[in-house]
Length: 148
Image 1 (spheres, helix red, strand yellow):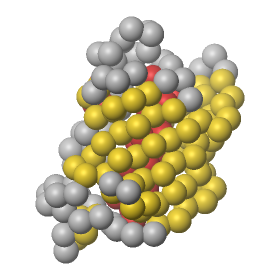
Image 2 (image 1 turned 90 degrees about the vertical axis):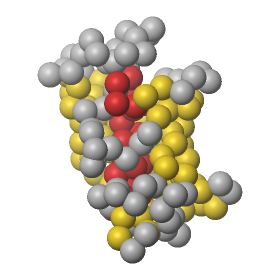
Image 3 (image 1 turned 60 degrees about the horizontal axis):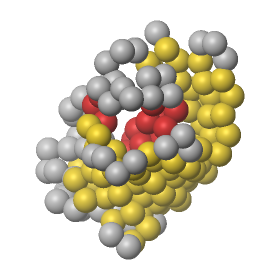
Image 4 (image 1 turned 135 degrees about the vertical axis):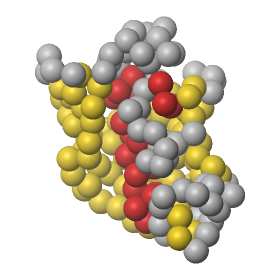
């Protein structure tokens, strides 16, 4: 999919906790998001996005893969279901560099595995965060997502 989708339609996060601006690509197993770091970001200190900010960006990107499956195929408004999710485990994380204010980061996530029941999903996702061609971080995490 090559459409910019406002991620607020698929995540409950709002400022100051929203760490993704929009989705640029996604399908059943992958997602790519964009986030421009602004000076008023809650995870910015001394004009640098913190490690926690990178992790939160990665988690929000990852959750959109599984979260989207709770909506109808053509539902780009994301308003038909209420879904909650959280990180259940961070299996690994490497922080290589921290981006600064006004830089734009691109985050890519790939679904590794998924277990679904009638009421929730548990998944493992690998993720990379980049600033242009510089790898800032990579991680693997488990997410728990449930329709409410």
